[in-house]
Amino acid sequence: MSETPDPTSTPTTGPPTDAPHTVEERLAELLTRARWFGGKGRPFAVTDVRRVGDLGGTGGADDPLVVVELVEVTYTDDARGSDSGEAATELYQVPLSCYRDHQERLDHAFVGWWDVPGLPADADGSASYAHVYDAPHDRVALHAWLVAFDRAGHGAAGGAWRVGGLDFHRLPGYDLEVDARASLFSGEQSNSSVMFGEDALMKIFRKVTPGVNPDVEVHEVLTRAGSPHAAELFGWLDVEVEGGVVQLAMLQQFLRTASDGWDLAQASVRNLFAEADLHADEVGGDFAGESARLGVALAETHAALAQHFPVEVRRGDATAGLAAAMTSRLEAALAVVPELEPHAEGLRRLFARVAQLDEVPVQRVHGDLHLGQTLRTTKGWKIVDFEGEPAKPLADRVRPDSVWRDVAGMLRSFDYAPRVAARTLEAPDEATARQRHHRAEEWAGHNRRAFLASYAGRGLTPAEEVLLSAYVADKAVYETVYETRNRPGWVGIPLAAIARIGAA
Image (cartoon, rainbow, N blue to C red; front, side, top):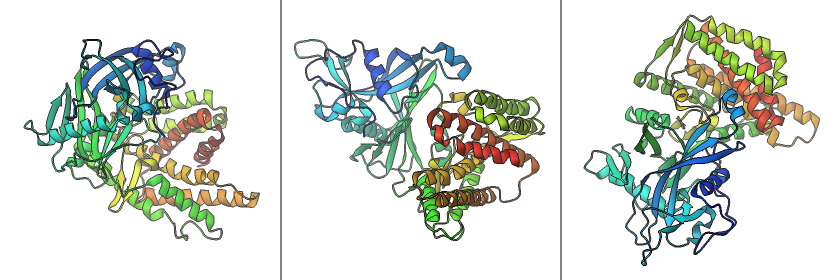
């Protein structure tokens, strides 16, 4: 399935009569259909389209003009923005593949038909109209990215190559296969990911903002440090704009033999459900060993980040501010999830204990960690996607935080895995449903303990126990809001966790 639905009509000689009349309207239609657009459900208008560069060609006479547009989106739900924390404007990267002639193979990625500056005019000197397509769907256009990255690795500028105003950067140590076939991933993503052959993966950032993208920044640090727990970074693409550098893409190692951590956990749970008389530590698919190894991988990754990024200690007002932020998120959630009310006072007391801590060490962390952000390879666990929560502003995503936020995210993921597996399997009778519920509780606890013991390597201090409990509760509160808005039938999963926290 493609990232954008098939258009209702595709022109061969000119714009269809029912098409939007402006470039802004056509790009707004693309955004509305795109899986990576973060403003679904919010009214918006495209208020600015700015070309920041082009990728040049790859030598073919029929090559497209591949341009990179930064598209400004302005939301019109003013009453919602200030209270919800949602941005009033956002910036999206839209690379476009512009052809003189209709490309039937790209009908599914058709955006529009308009005059494209930079495209050679017709022989008679008429306007440079082009058939315009979403470039990540176009293998010819994708080859231009790969060629530019390769030139950056072999150029005289020391790992950099500029083309059409765009700056490609390369790290040493890996030679690209320039003729590798490009394939666009079709899954639900906030970015567009492209595989080149079997060894390289390019992530095209869709929602962008001036500043260093944390996914690029962290991967560069871990690659240079030789970390075994992250995919190697091969290079990145950025552009200078008013307001600073905008990073547009990253090229990294593709872990073709890897298995998704969430999928492995689900398989383990299903194996447990199939063995009615065995416990979680007795079945052949026991996941605790992997959970323990994942705990070690996270601990070593945190240690590497602490060596290369600033480490701070929050005290006094800063610690109180952390507690206040958790409490504020709870109060906002109560308006959306009334079922939280019986637990609200206990949660307020827990968050208040954070304010009483003498100090809270903080450093660069992952920021959005769960089993789906991990890959199991033949050489061990890899942690991926250090971009942080995409919905948050860049300043929040790079701000130092406690390592216990990442740990809490993984603990919540271990809690979700068996309960989601149980919901995907139809129980033949009530007794089986009760048994699966019991086994889900057992699996979650078994793996949470294995992960936490290996991560810490010791018992937690009282202050660490407070912090971890608070971060777990804060994450579960967020989950209740998400589930209420998106999957109301699942809200019981985080609510049960909050009830356990209250009982403890």
